Image (cartoon, rainbow, N blue to C red; front, side):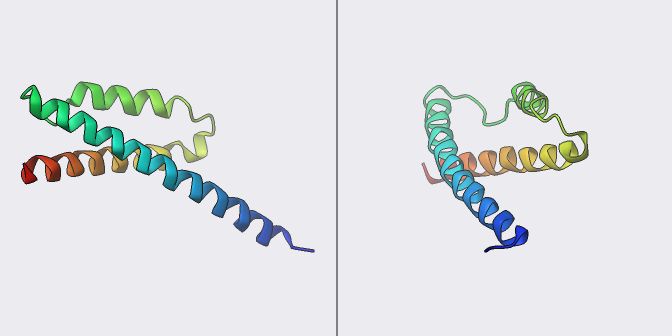
Length: 92
């Protein structure tokens, strides 16, 4: 019978698989967003929207002990999104 550590690791692996799928979906949409921004000559950065996104998503976290880590992760995701958009913009 698997011990608790093995069971927890299996659950983390399943969550990681879901995160990978969601990450890919998110970046497919980010590509569509940058295509729209290019067509309409809009800047990549919308800092007001970015702050709104961070606040809205941080509000979904009920465990104050991990809120800081979630905010960091989400900020990193947004940074990667901007980097990806810039890479697409540079290639056009």
